[in-house]
Length: 261
Image 1: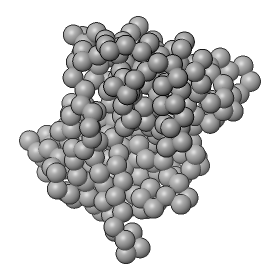
Image 2 (image 1 turned 90 degrees about the vertical axis):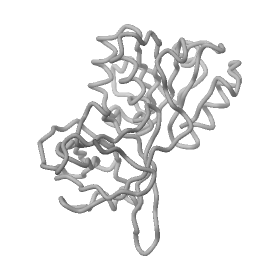
Image 3 (image 1 turned 30 degrees about the vertical axis):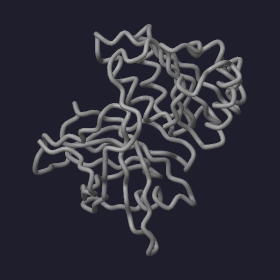
Image 4 (image 1 turned 135 degrees about the horizontal axis):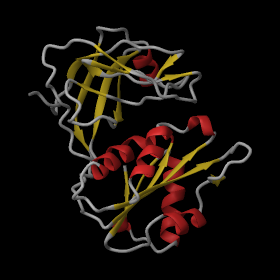
């Protein structure tokens, strides 16, 4: 069984569908998530493609990510991504990549054709999750920053011995921007120790979630309190992370309580 290595490894890309392709997977399963624009993503479907070894796994520790490298317009470009699949998914991995008009790497990946390759290296990161390492975990995510959160949430919820309580605040601009909402809602409905609050800048009529930017009131109500047994992890655009860290400090959270992916 092969795993991801610390040197860049070429992996075949998969078939792609939809108006704008936002996921490229390597291996025998095509994970297809299509968007109607560069700012929205909807769930898609899966179909098989053959590989030499269908037992290959990524081998990333929970909480770690990978780096993708490409030469674009004569320059080496590297970007980090967290798979939303796990080592239980043999022979492939799934990435969620939002395609931006001026995103060098996302545009490059969007234009890849079946049979072409991407270069991947890992594991990377300073956070490694182990079961019950914290009593409660609070999560602050914005946009595609949901991917490392989902990786940790899935690991916790599939382990009956892991009693960690998880509270997620997921910020987006519009309702259609909420990635993986169906899965998050299903997980929350099935597991009482996982709860999620969606916060929108532009909520639709009748919206029952949070409104505006994530603020201290949202945090007081939905995140675990500052305590040595608890941890707050966050992943989002840099301005959001900076603002969230400032709010957390005002609420009494210490540096040791906070981790930024």
